[in-house]
Length: 298
Length: 298
Image 1 (cartoon, each protein chain N blue to C red):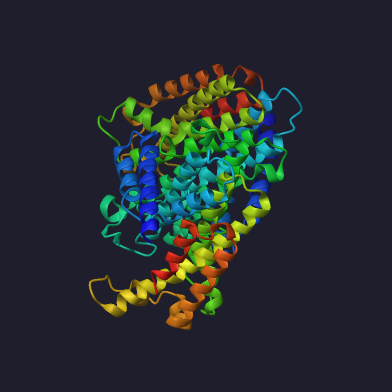
Image 2: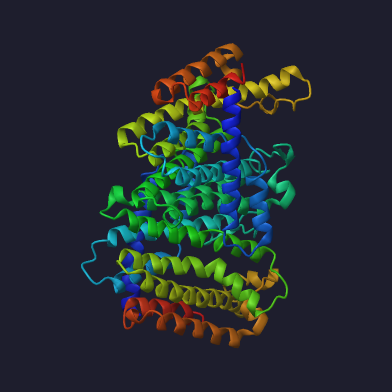
């Protein structure tokens, strides 16, 4: 795990530096807006989606990794979309969360209007980054366009947006199948897009990209269950950690529906399915990262 | 003007039908979300940006208009972005408008959470449409990517987002220069992108596109002043029309800062500059449309 930690720190630093540079290039004469964007985007976070993108790129690349810089920009675009979804989900009319990563949420710090606009700006920024890749890197237009389409699908009504809508008002019956379908949209598609994007910049063909996307969907499902287990255990320990918000709110989670141990087993199954779909990861940091995603909750 | 009306009706119908089809293709298992998107997107509107895109395409096309179907999709993407900005601007934390086009605003009809998400979905949909153009039309990837970049710039922090942020809290001094800089962002860039997008699908080169974009910026400034004059005159007549919201709110408009007649003259100057930058429009419906934008307020 030491090796994983070191590599993760290196690439997290690369992502932070690149996010900083990309936001710095933004045309904006509104200082408050720029500050709100930086506050949420550069305020910590595991950078899991960027790492999955970069490391999938690394294991799938057969030649010299000449598109890794472009993949880094795309990894930043993924993080912009993830951050936008957090900013909007935290709004009073949504999950009404006043804290995010130990600091006041964007709407608490800047007011609701700027938080809505900063979220809009972050979603938009992802597409600005991807559609202008060719200005900064030697990327074929079809490669940039494929990455744009992959992200737009994951962040659209097939993915994030329906996921959040279903999370706010889950359909009946509130069983494991419904939980799964929320997880696929809310978490699965964006992580699938992260891994697919890595494959796109590695030059993988359509069939391989489809396989990697399926593996990413499994990794995303494993991650969401593990995340819900962590929230639950924070509650059970009652020591130092913030009490589990999910239980307090009656949020629909897999542990709540089928129990803790069966949920943990399900997370492991999804993880193994992810690794089986991505044999190129065997013995690499990508495998270690995907295993870590689930095992941190064990 | 009869000819203009007929052509406008034809192409408005084409835009409506295409928007309907594009929303119908959306992957979404959340019925409420789809309904909220359709409610705002298909609930009327002048479709000015789509018409400017299509008619600029028509005057700039030298060969057979084999990309007009693709330009129609791009025109729909522009309307998605325009509609998203209306849905988010109407929110209680922004302009707090309960009515839009004579009907309850999205947040009044569907609640704030769904309105935020529907706005997000509409912004995202624009990029889904543009990044997948090649699946539906014979469009070169660089053409689709150019249209994506043009729209992303206009809807980002250089354009719409900063425009709305400045509109909410205009910087000092509140003079004509500040009004101009808000108008450029809030209205100018998206109309510039509409005309540039038409030129992109007409196959125009970089230099021509730049010229058309500048013409579009002038048309956008003319339009915004005309719009503010209409709002003001609705107030003065006090007959049948909704009272002028701008005055009631102390909104920063050009008529409020320099007076009605000087503002009207300024709108005409911008309109003439737009036409001068787009000589290909001479004698065409595009010229008639741009003139109509300003003259409806005369």
